[in-house]
View (cartoon, rainbow, N blue to C red):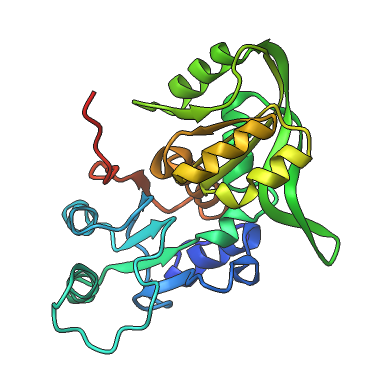
Length: 267
C-alpha cells in the first residue's frame, strides 16, 4: 500500500496490520476495529495508549474521526449500550460523533519490530533478538527482546532507564553491585518472562506490572526492574505514527494531548 488518498478507516487498519497482523494477537485479546465504519473516509487520526472519554472528546474537537490506540477499548462482548459503565459510555459517545476506534495490542507486542523492539531502540541495545520466539511461516514473532549494551554499572543503567522512559519511580530487586551487559525487555505486563530472561543470560530484565512475589526471582541471579505498564508502552504511538506517515502520507496524524497514565505517584 503506497497511496491511501483519500484514506479510509480500513486503509489505516491494513497499514498497521501489514506490520502486525491480527493473527499474532494472543487468544484473550481483541485487537482490530473496535467501533466505526471500515469504509469511512478518515479526516485525521489521534494516537493514544488508552482510549478515554477525554481522548474521544479531543478527537471531536480537532476534527479527527479516528482514534488508534494500543490497548483495546473493548476487551469483552457488550450486550447493551445503556451507559452502565465507562466502556459503554465511551462506545456510545464515539458512535454518536462518528468516531472510529482501532486498536493494535498484543499483535503489535509480538511483531518483529514491535513494542519491545522499540523499547530496545530507546535504550540503544544491539544484536536484539526475540526473548520468547515463535515462527510464523519464516517470520520470527514473539514476546520480549534481549540484546546488549556496552558494559556499565547496573545502577547507572537503571538511572538511564528511568530517564529514557520518564519514570518517576523504578521498583527493582537483585544485586546491583555489578555491571550490566545483556539486557532483556518486555513492554506491558511481562512478569511471565522473568524465568526466560534469566535462562537467556540477561543481567537485568525491565518490564511492568511485576508482582511482589515475582521480585524474589532476582535471588536466582538477575536484576528485575519494574518501570510501570504505561511507561513501558508509552512510545508505541510512535510506531503507529511512523506506519501511517509511511503508508498513508495524506492523513493528518497527531499524538493525543489528553493521553494520561492512570497511575499517579506521590514522591
